[in-house]
Image (spheres, rainbow, N blue to C red):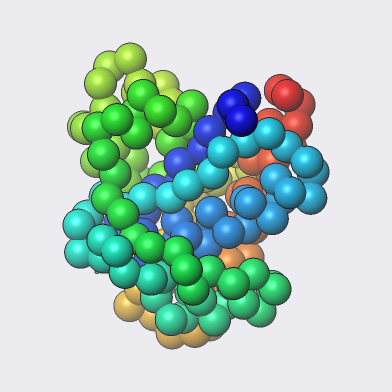
Length: 157
Ligand code: 4NP
């Protein structure tokens, strides 16, 4: 099956924000019957082959989605060819991605909150050093981002 679009969500570790965005966006894609491939990756190597943070798993499960099988991976050079949209969570992610990307792929890179009217440039803060409530706040912000992202694609498919 070929996809019209493919989205890679990127955060630092690939165990908190980007797996949340992946799970939330897959739910939106399925609900709206969109033909989009979805994945996530981290800038850093620390959590390769690890499941998401237990707090991420717990928050996402509250919304009926089981992500215990997700495994962390680090972004690879071929991702810049393979994906049509590479979506970071904070400005540091964007800086790192722009540094890695070939010039032909730089315009694929943006922040998740850029898709929310009035929220362009807003970061999704890292909840890793926070508590479970921070993960709930992260989910709410991520969900706001991915629902606008789904509308963006709905208008282009
Ligand atoms: P994430 O959070 O980028 O939202 O997955 C982090 C997870 C782990 C680390 C940093 C951020 N870490 O340094 O291990």
